[in-house]
Image (cartoon, rainbow, N blue to C red):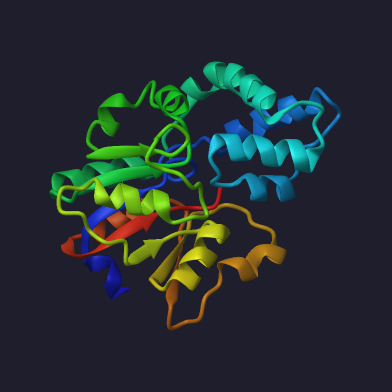
Amino acid sequence: MANYSKVDHVIFDLDGLLLGTEEIYVEMFSIICGKYGKSYTFDVREKVLGTVESDSCAILVKEVNLPMSPQELLSQQRLLQREMLPKTKLMPGAERLVRHLHQHGIPIAVATSSSEESVNLKLTNHKELFSLFHHIVMASSDPEVKKGKPSPEIFQICASRFPDKPKPDKVHTMNPQVTMMYRSGGPSMILLHVGHDYPSEYAHQVLLPRSECSCQHNNNLDHFCYRVKKGGQLFLLRVIL
């Protein structure tokens, strides 16, 4: 896959790619839903995926029919995350890839839908590693980000904060919303599969014409350490939670 050999900048997603938070969030929302006799199903999880915190709570309240306002749900979520998110571990291969890119002088950044508070909790035990990133855009608390995913705005803002302002014209993604967004928006795309179970009925959402993308099935990020070199493209790295 020759395209992997030309990288100038890399923008990472955070949850499920660099940090193993997906099961923490599933447990967190399952606890809240369970208190009211509700279930946090995969269908709901797929709708919540990648959204900013206020939208996540609004979607969950509506889809699960929770007897509270989105703001009340967010308050409960924040109480739980203060206890649970500091336990966050790195995903396999994440540290190796980040250090590899940094050592080779490739600027790296993070674009996450999370808030500054939740990101700080997640990074409790990983502050030194994340000091290697040029910047982190946290959509839920960043005043410049007006639209949550699937809008491309967070990626555009993240790219603009590099000194040389590269354009996000090559995308690594596994979020079905973002996949469809970039399909309609024009850029070519490479899908990065990182070993998560995803029901077959959703498969069409992450498929693109062969001319527009290629797929790399992998269990972790280790292989990228041997494939990335300086070149001419910006990559956005995302996975399905």
